[in-house]
Image 1 (tube, helix red, strand yellow):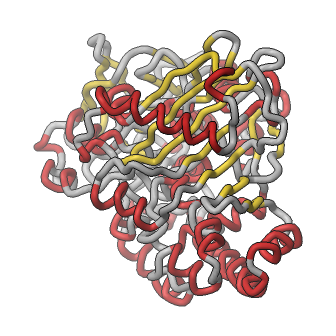
Image 2: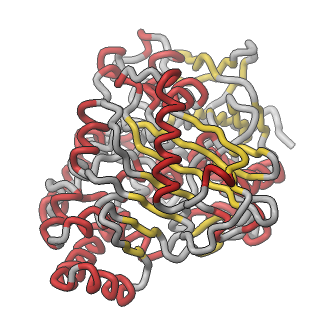
Amino acid sequence: MSSMNSKKAVVIGSGFGGLASAVRLIRKGYEVTVIEALDQLGGRANVFKKEGYIFDAGPTVITAPYLLNELFEMLDENPKDYFELLPVDPFYRILFDDGSQFDYVGEEDRILDQIRELSPSDVDGYRKLAAHAKEIFDVGYTQLADQPFDDLASLFRVIPQMIRLKNHKSVYSLVSHYIKDERLRTAFSFEPLLVGGNPVKITSIYLLIHWLERKWGVYFVKGGTHSLVKAFEKLLIKKGATIIKGTSVVKVKTHTGKVTGVVTEDEKTYSCDILVSNADPVRVYRDMIDKKERSKHSDFRLKRKTHSMSLFVAYFGAQKTYDSLAHHTILLGPRYKGLLKDIFDRKKLAEDFSLYLHAPTRTDSSMAPKGHECFYVLSPVPNNESKVNWEIEAERYKEKIYQFLEKTALPGLKSDMTVDFHIDPRYFENVLQSEKGAAFGIEPSFRQSAYFRFHNRSEDIEGLFFVGANTHPGAGVPGVLNSAKVLERIIPDASLGLGVLKKSSLREYENRNIL
């Protein structure tokens, strides 16, 4: 039960970053209110249900499960009472354009056996690549993923290690240093696409994803990813949080440079001492905060941000099962680097594509009616800077994808298809309120990573914090969960008073082990 003197925190948006932040704020003693624009929690991780099929709208790959478990444990709850993680094996099945296949799995001996079949001369090269990826992980993830990067000193401290680890190279370039077979170069460099990055350009620090998956495995949440969202909702309500759905925040209220509350589109005001935004920082700064309050995030600077690619996703059900199919399948088209250039640089909707096919009923049959199968197929596409007219292109593009699937992974699909619908960049821009329709926030280029990404602590407004894909450390479920973990180091416990930790006093608090 709240008291007149309790410290209040508002969380805007309920993606995994927002949900994790709400948990951590409760643990710090705040009275928490979560405000979600949609009629269900989850943000990108919402759900579509049709005719007995359950379709996860967003992320389906769960890694680093400790990040989820610790959130329930810190509020004295057993995560097993809330959700169940099912291991996925293989992690991904990759079908190459020439008809060959590669299963990416966790155990090195199984990976080496498959490399040996495709390209025996690359076996030793992979061993060296994996060792290098582990080194990058030990620095880029273990040491930095949950640390704030809100001053230049934090960047300068890691530059020597980044140079030593060759992080000036791109993921594709570093993989190519060790691997000669072009198919395997693709197999071991595509993972940055999972966080919205171009493998040919993104810094090789993102090669840590490879080791992260090998270290902790790949999982699927029983009942779908949204069942994890429901678990968080149950936890937050049990611990006293207020959850408001179906209304957007339209204004951040401030006084003398400090946050005082938010106003929603239904003209209600929610006062707070701490405001954590899981919403797109471009839109928060530009649309919700008066220009005179923003010295660091002017409209001009916000316009200079570059944004990740978008996605075209088709959801469909079939009145049969495909028992030989893997849970996660990557179907590669005839081009790799050229297609990436079309998507990221030319902002052009290409005639060819590479696809990610998600078949959750391979792991959890409850996702579809008995004897049926549900899927989504995802194609990376340019964001809305492309000016593609999706009103015209969407159906044509979807039909091309279905024809491709019929010829490859899903023979006879069209005759057995039941449910069928899609989302495209318009959904990301208009429904999820992501600038330019970007599916993963701002692009994780070098000049938009670490210190150069949106800071977790606002430089303009005291008491305003950011989590989620646009902030350090970046997109992906582990990334956004770690962005909330950064808050542990920059938001004081409610018992310490209303004042937010200043940069000058942060180290003092850390040394006293208060955070």
